[in-house]
Length: 551
Image 1 (cartoon, rainbow, N blue to C red):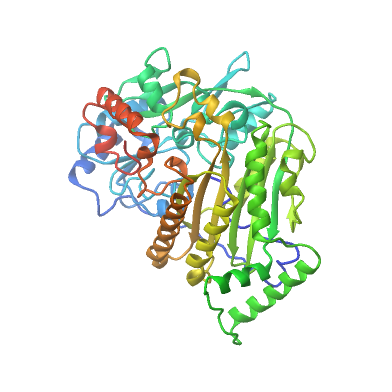
Image 2 (cartoon, one colour; image 1 turned 45 degrees about the horizontal axis):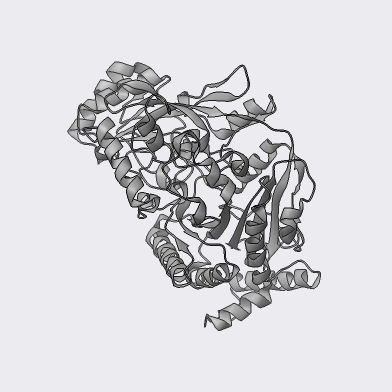
């Protein structure tokens, strides 16, 4: 979710004269870290001795391509003491058995898409990179598939599409399987089949003692429950046996809407935000040109006011309740490329029905550009992937609210206030994201004994709100974190004031400062802690794997 983090390049009318392209050069990094201690040194030597060419511990060289496998710069900059690249579940079991003998921190990586530093890359410790466990085996009856956790969803979809099948997988085809599923996993087919965790039949898990076991509702119903939303707290999953479903073509795509600059100006006056006085600087000249182009676009009918967009979001959340084939995401972004506020939608209707009525509130708005149409699912997943540029610095956080156009409009005001002082930073891309959680999805959460998320039928519909700040300069890290934290805290306070707040925190979008498992409810958290003590008596997956959310 991870989804819709960037503003697209090439807004047809606006892009000419306003867009600045840039690239980033990835460099190789040496292994070993100043954080490495004697225990980790000994563990790394033992891993190399045991696993041979599946372990790397050489301070003077690097593992080719390792850094480039991470989505965010913040994760790729972490330097582990050594890296294990197992090719089988038995090698994962060997690695955990060795690590468990000493006090050396470790992290487990599937696709490396998290924005949390250390989530899947261990500073001075052992990074277990599972990309070599990437097999996909489809059952003869075409009802399930066993998927190696090191896969990215692109490979899974490519395999299944040849069989006219789909799966409740990531909407961004570049996301890895493992972390996505264990955190919940929102899919374009979740209205019909549930989240990814609700479609797992069996987990192949390496436990803290190094044993490899199958965990399902029959073999270990308690651990099966905990793995369905419990993140990395209970073991290392090497394979997921998941339901797959018949699927043909769909209708969907993305659309971009220019926010009326008059609306922006009125809000800034209301919020007492002063406009930068004009000067002959390149920055101001570009801004003036882009505003003029935006006003021209409005004269031709290619812009919208914010209240219309937020009302479309609320209306569509409610109308979706009666149409399980519909799924959407709505965002607002400040584009430094074109100096404009831009709304964006990603619509998916999982039947080949042109312009389905459920989305009429969005499709009736005047868009700058739209790719909506009948297509194969893989095209939509790849379109989401292409929105998400790798190698930049990210901050993500999330919260849940009752659907309300008024609340979203007020959150937008907070967003503008917090972003205005920093909006001209180089390649800065701030986004707020709104997506629905409806009754159909929650109904599926109760199958196979239920998942750990703690969301009840009476809680929905909800809006999953997330904020994404993207930038390039490490010197701006604290500035960005401060702006994002204020934006999140003010938005939550506003939702509470309006009696629209819900405590659920979606793990895959959360910042490390957020208490994800508190949002699952006290009862579920206590149950998960008891399960953890039962299967991990030495607290290996909390004590030695500190880089992510802990129960």
